[in-house]
Image 1 (spheres, helix red, strand yellow):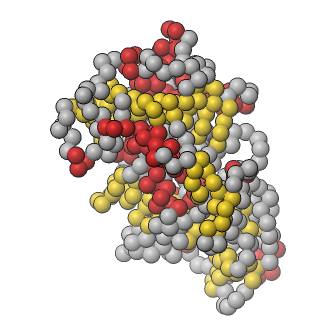
Image 2: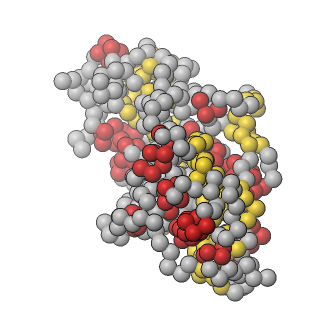
Image 3: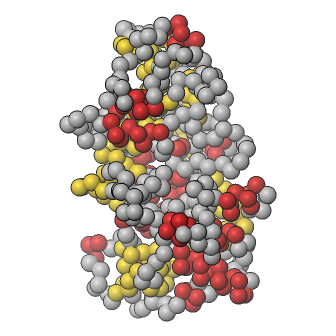
Length: 223
Length: 239
């Protein structure tokens, strides 16, 4: 079994790139974990699509206020300086370029920056939520994901095969094996696990990895 | 001017068969449970209204509120962004059986279409959905070198909205994140029916804090102790 990062470790790595004071939207599910790993001394302001800026952790069980929820419909709390707003304002923040970072999950990412993360095909009930909005407007759109699927198939591809969420929108991918930027329609490798050779990483990637400079070791704490 | 209506039954009495009804709320937050249940009660007693087109972010949860409206067989079509929830069984069964039509709209586009409907803007361009299957058949235009999708306004015959406080002139405030689609839907419907925890005399809401001005509201009905969808579902409630 080759080494790979846990979800918490991927989230930790993504959190290190969020600046103090950044306005951030975290996709529902796995990306929500990023909020737990803000570096000491930095405070990001988290946005949730249903209409809150600067929400905090979940309340203790039994103390939920069901008018105070996040986009995943989980109960949250407010931090000092929080704000409420309606949905049109909320998505003006999203599409209008006011968010510094959006961090989303992915089924597939293409070297072109295309993202597929909302539908696995025509079966069942389709549901999109805010995914297609979130990929537009944030200054950085980052993805956190396992490097490959549960079956071992690459999730980083030349072209997505699943229905697209957005075209040319992703700028950085944090995976269980590497940190990869998307620049000029190419995957550019920035960091990889030290125990992994470039060739082994390339073999698990469905498009060519490019090098434009030194590749750093991807190091994260035990979590 | 007094927009107060004495009872929930009276407030929903004129909603017609085939109407397009916007229902506020994001999940249970802001869901006007009592207005929805009054509408279901009317349908059970009279057979009307039926064949509704409902606009909501979701598709209901459990067997109360919007889910109960669908379960009662009153909804022909749903326009929403995310028809899944913790317990979406009512919608899912009907959808997979082909008994309800779904128009899936990205969440921000849904909000903006409703806002546009209320603001008299028949269409607008958004980057959202470009290059995806949800933009199929829609007009694409380039602005400053980037492609955008044309989307059309969305209007309704009726909006059902939950507020925290109303005055008798229809000025509204909301509670916490429950406002979500409420202010937009109030603008976009020909008749907006609001349930409020408290109805006060004009002047009882500081004009600086009014979120929805009364011009967008036609009826207000007091529901002093409103039910929450999550609480009902945790108790296994069925309407």
